[in-house]
Length: 404
Image (cartoon, rainbow, N blue to C red; front, side, top):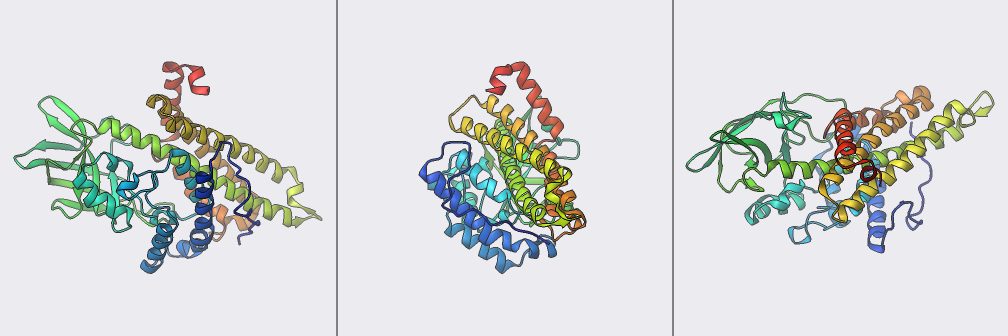
């Protein structure tokens, strides 16, 4: 059972702790309307169906997203994107975080590395992706290379026609539906191992899904294990140049961590709304359960976490938009991801507890978010890796740079 508090009107004053112009406020309102009118109503069906909605429903989501001007996010307008700033993108991701079952994955989108692609790559893959005609997948993680990408074992060697790629990639999100993979591999050049991103069309010989495991959440796409065996790609199928993989991947991680932080803030927003509405209406022993400090104080702690996490996340997004030193942004994005993912998990746990037995029903948004938020402390770098990055920032950049 879900108890919904009345949402604020769309023309309500912004609650962001950052200065937002008219365009950002309008985008925020559009994203909120799309989230509340299109995504949230589909959550019960998505949960019942294990995350896999019917094709016609997915087509509806794509059409609504395109009509609302939400496809393509930070990709360039000339490539079919929206040209948002990171702050604007974070406003949209915050709204998506208020939903469960990752239905927003159906909004036409593509990984940021395509901005460094050739004109041919952009025409063949990026533009169709932003029209909702195909999906891409990013293949980096391996059995022995998770939080430590320097341990990547996948290799590429030169051939007369281009490159021959070998390797096995784990947790390839969307790999079960992707038309194209962006694969991180080390190009072997004599004694050198040059980390390089390769564009690999999913229809090429030598590609196989060797495992498609079930995971805790019910999401639209799986995270299969994909093996690349003597896959032949052309000289032009490189993004960012030979040896440029590390820099592009660092940029990707930074962006993904800001996005995770923003979605976690949105999740706390939804959790607190639903649980506060429930706790103020539910009576036990002649009093509202909200009047018991065992219920209200944990919610107060989570409200403080949500407000602090939101300010931190948007501060990092603003820094990135302002062209701050990339390594500082990298460190602070890790800080935001660490804080918000840990705080959102605590919030979900507290809210399930406040709902009591109802909180253990899959029909309850708190239960779904409890399952879904757990992975935010793992993917795109575990909390332990984020702590390592933040602590190195304190040492190398200084305390003042990390706090201000």
